[in-house]
Length: 264
Image 1 (cartoon, helix red, strand yellow):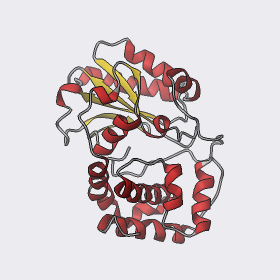
Image 2 (cartoon, helix red, strand yellow):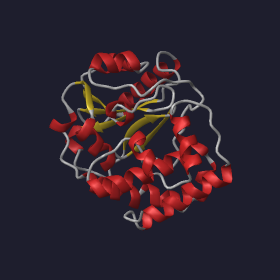
Image 3 (cartoon, helix red, strand yellow):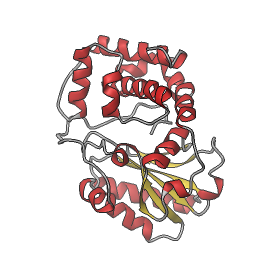
Image 4 (tube, helix red, strand yellow):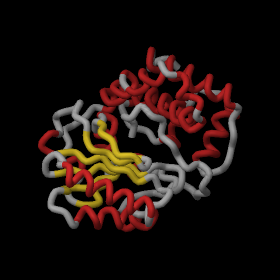
């Protein structure tokens, strides 16, 4: 999930096997460290209505130690100061314990205010607590492939979202912000994220369908050797790309795609 201006940080050095196909709660809980413990904590409250999982876990493209674990919790009203502190305590304990190294994050959204698209919601991600919106892209992913770990299914709660609208919002928002800040591309992780995101955007605008990161690799605008290095990193291997070249292709593709997403 994008939405914060800071680049996402993955633990790329950890080993991992093939993507884990997700279809049932038991499979999710078995393969995603800390998830069962987190859901158990939310079930002890009266104000967490649903817990959903999106992103790579929901789409079956999850690589343990590489992929983030992206959760969304529907809540009965906006969280007050006491509840926000409870959320922080939950995540700190989970991060230090069963979910250590898993990058398990969650955004807490009040169901009654779902139509307030610009609203910013309490979010835990990468050991930080902050406020951010529930993006159209996350909403589209939840409706298409989201899995309910507790409560109702996403598609029965969220208003419909066109995939193409969600993609354009990402390109015109977060990625237009990023292209104007070339220093973000000093991070190899961010370069991979940019190249994959631009490829996914182009494919989704052509087809009207969401695609996984693995599926989008064949549409990355970069030399074959760079794409192969990206593929190796997604599988958990250590594969270094020459920084200036990596940065240039990632930034240039972001500029080109945000200006004309139908090019290429």
